[in-house]
Length: 212
Image 1 (spheres, rainbow, N blue to C red):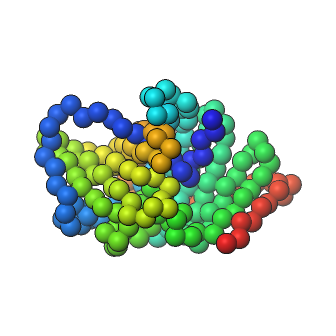
Image 2: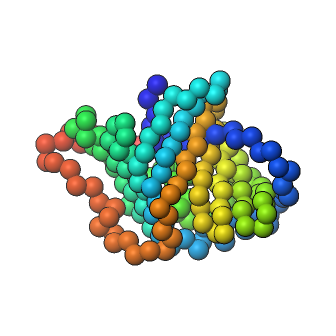
């Protein structure tokens, strides 16, 4: 099974504690405020993907960078290299092993992927998601987002913050595939040049442009 990072992040992690829980407009506003505080976000990650029976099908490691408005960089290094970069209008996917770059327009579906929550607009979250949250010990907050659109790439996304720092994402898709994305070496609102969101690839690569 091949895992494509743009449709990433699903997980059903059992929560043993009985935390406080809320589901209303305040949950959406609270998450939006958390995300607005992120002008930039950088982290290393480990992403574990499992099937509906709980069997691990893939584990990848890499790096991500996000910068508002609209800039995003995603690189997987193990077991296969892939780079994904967005400038807010287009998404470039570079597969060095295939010597190929695919360019996608930033349509509505792609704009609503979990990755874009770190770099895109968050003022209208209530139009796209139903949001609830749980608190753990006063320092940890977990938000659960359920897309309102039946065409979404995922059916549930959980984002865990510790003292305002995003540390984990867990996602489930319509095929019951689940993923846990854990972040480390996190830098929030550090200096990131716009040039960090430009792909550098050989002139010899095949470029495929996906037109809507």
